[in-house]
Length: 316
Image (tube, rainbow, N blue to C red; front, side, top):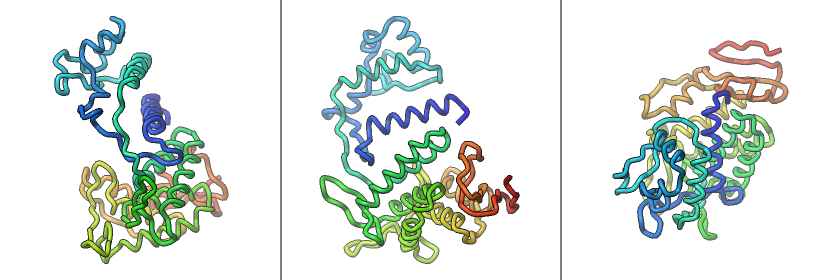
């Protein structure tokens, strides 16, 4: 990750995951928006509070980088929203320390399989982009914990709360977990067995040309959606996971047509994969990710090649 501002943003998100959502090797579902039944109480400020908390110089600098209005922008108070990227680390840390002394919103301690798998995918991507191998190791521990908690050998459960597991299976959970496993497999072939089993689980949700989100004996069939917003749709995640497995294990993939932008952006990444617009790197040992284009996948084998746009070239 060459751009400093991108790296700082990624580091901030990783810190948020660690400080606000981490629960051993997994992540909590959410936090309430309100505190003690007051919407935003933990997070918003009055104009007077900000002035009293900062020096005159700090307040002016904050006002230059955040929208600060005496009338407020949220029910008469100020929700701090950036208007530029000027660094204000010391001021922000000062305000954060004060905010942590306030009553905090209640956490939703439920563990959801699919969102934890998404977090693992993000950790893997961040680790590769930032040359932080410990993040991929953390992702591997998260996925192992999900498998221990939810996998029965054929299907994944959905959520866990206060000792109770919801065993009903959902496409999104299986597809997100398979995507993460396929990424871990690139660096460690020991993930191959569970990857094959999880791929079969994902395929079990396919119904002809459509996908089922969930089947339950006591409820009607729920069909899966294609719409990617704000997170990948279940279908997009399933198609990506299976495309990755196929490419990594030497199976054929079919070219696909792009779907509507903004509505199917994540699915269209899978189209790039299927249409040969990802570098498929074959090598005897793992090549450092920092040496490869962002749109790369790695698999073990010989000879060492880089296949892209229908052409394979030798890697020396």
